[in-house]
Length: 121
Image (cartoon, rainbow, N blue to C red; front, side, top):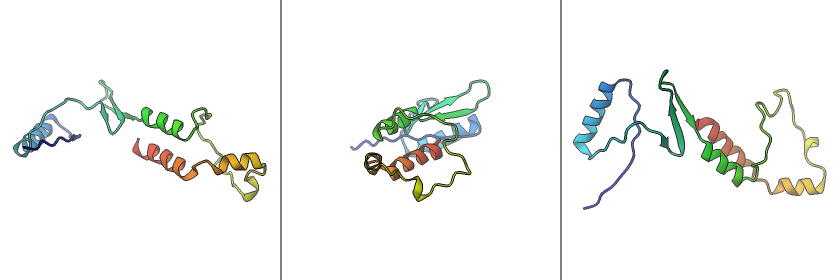
């Protein structure tokens, strides 16, 4: 006999809906309720006990990303660039040392990782 395991995270409006969903899943699968979710896909889930509001945090992801792209010591800014800023070819590094440093920066991978962080949480 082969046993497969998987995790399901459900979000339902009422306890009654939760019980119905669990009952229906239980007719086809062996299920185990692990209680309120705290972590899924490396996202930490926090529910405010008073308001019921849910917050997602990806601290482990962004720490790993900063380390991977060697930008752990970057300076945090609320808005890194002015909306009116227009970059041109003249803004490219004109010092060979700086140009070589930037040549080895995986710009698209860094940007993609930052966008995933923004979209996922």
